[in-house]
Structures are given as structure tokens and as C-alpha cells.
Image 1 (cartoon, rainbow, N blue to C red):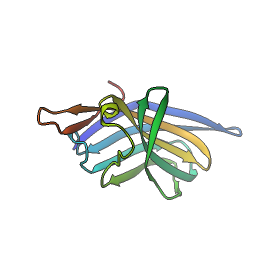
Image 2 (image 1 turned 90 degrees about the horizontal axis):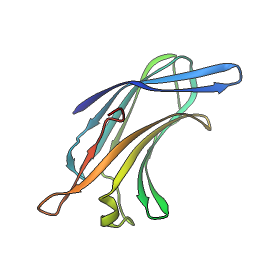
Image 3 (image 1 turned 30 degrees about the horizontal axis):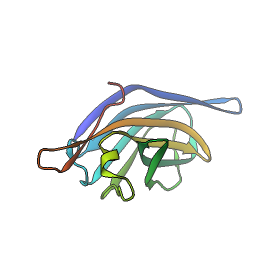
Length: 149
């Protein structure tokens, strides 16, 4: 399991006169540097300066294709409130379904996106660069990188 300290990822959002500030404190990704079809477990710890009344996370994987982007919806959390202070949200994806994406396109860099909404307003997006490589035996492997490096 890789624990990434992400003290510099933050976002501000204004709702009326209130300014919502979110700071991602850590991300845990497991497994990592593994076969492409292994499960994906992602946990994000974040700090909010205000109550998030209708918080909802969406997890997506984006592949850049010539002339367009292919977005794979991975998971959506239930809507919940997150208190002022530190909260954690976790996802467990049994397998990323790459159906419809050519294997040659997967070998490009992709993005794992975790987006937090409050109602319909996007509060913060955490973008994690993902590199898919072909091993000598022909299998595909994934590595998800710290967005600050």
C-alpha cells in the first residue's frame, strides 16, 4: 500500500458569501505497480473548513484518444454530509473495465480522477496520472503516480 502525503492539493469554492476550502491530506492506493486488471482500492483523506451537506464522490478513468477522450465511470459514492474538519472517503473497484478501448490506446498515459461534489457543484478534483506499460511477457501493468511529483 502506498500512502501519499498531498498537503498542497486544495481548492476553494464560493457558495453565496461562504468560501469552501478543501485540502487533500493523504491518498492511499493499493495495489499499485500491478497488473492492469487487479482490483483498485483508493482512500482519500481531506480537510474541509465548512460542512459539506450533500457530498458525493465520482471516480473516473480518462484515456486520451486521438481527437476525443474516453471516460470510464468507475464508481459513485452515495450522497452524504461531511462535517467541518477531517473526513475520509474510500473506494474499492474489483476491476477497471477497459471494454471498448483499444489496447494500443491504453499504453498512453491516462488519468484517474476523483471528483468531490456538494450537490451539483464540483468542489475539488484530484487527478492522478496513470501509466500503463506492457511487460516482456505481454501483460499490461498499471502505475498510479502522486499528483505532486
